[in-house]
Image (cartoon, rainbow, N blue to C red):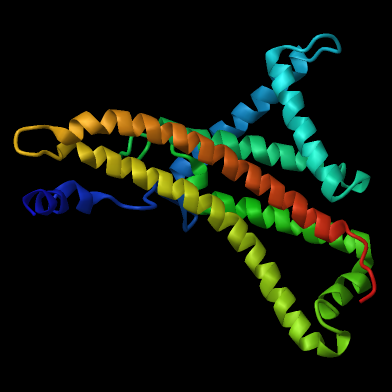
Length: 262
């Protein structure tokens, strides 16, 4: 009981906060400056990777970097071909860019030390970036649907699915809810996982002051647990980037599919 009471009374735990950012007021708007500069740095890294890849590409025996890149492109291409077919070729650059950009952003989580304000936070742990990317994807998906079906077919699609056309009020309600949920779930899935990772780092940092009598148990556990968590966090970051790209492909699959008569 004594140990449990001591752990629960650690003052640092009360200082752990979620979602704090370095903020500035710009034209009356509150801007999360740490998210802005982290996003710009991630974008620059992605562009540099692309330029380096372009400079090193060869038609002969590929290097390790080119081989890794070709494997990623082939994986995305296969997923698009299996889901959408040849008509989805234009989705490949978008899905691949999203994967690389999000994975790069997620890797910033590994640099975190669990402080109140991180110098280079993972921008995907701020809801603004995942939501902006999700809305961008959904707008492109709807544009592809209109191009594929025409305005009339686009509207009709929401009126005669999933029930017969005479139940069009129910169909419309269900489809509107579904379309609203898509960007929200796409953004919150990515944001939630990255935010949880940052919170976990803060909890591990708070372990430093935990003691059992004179023994600095927390200080001994913090380093190995942090290393293990960061490795796990890297895997989670890759998985979340892949899921975001995969859902993008699936949304385009629905938008670009032929609208069969009900």
